[in-house]
Length: 127
Image (cartoon, rainbow, N blue to C red):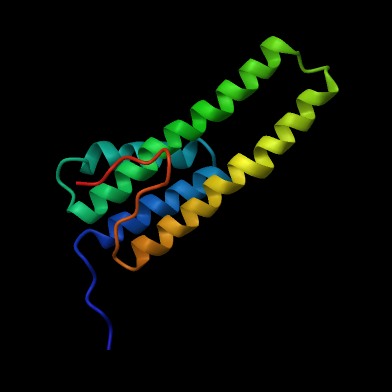
């Protein structure tokens, strides 16, 4: 017998799925999907969906700021021809980007279970 789905669970799963797609398959395009979902449902969605949509929207913004800011700082300070720039870029993707993916997988599993999830350190509190 199937368990009853929590109110907003499908929307929460959609938001978390788009977050992972944004990180791994279609950056930018999936982010536009997150932005559209967030603006469309930020006031009307059930609390579970609103929590997950807030998380994915704001953590995606933070991730974008991290990648753009880190690359801009490296370029402005050292330039692209400095060999350590590439070491730092690879370390960023190995550590930060991978961590965001793992946290997104946890968020997706929580959404699929019908439970709220707050991303550590950079996530916003849920209502």
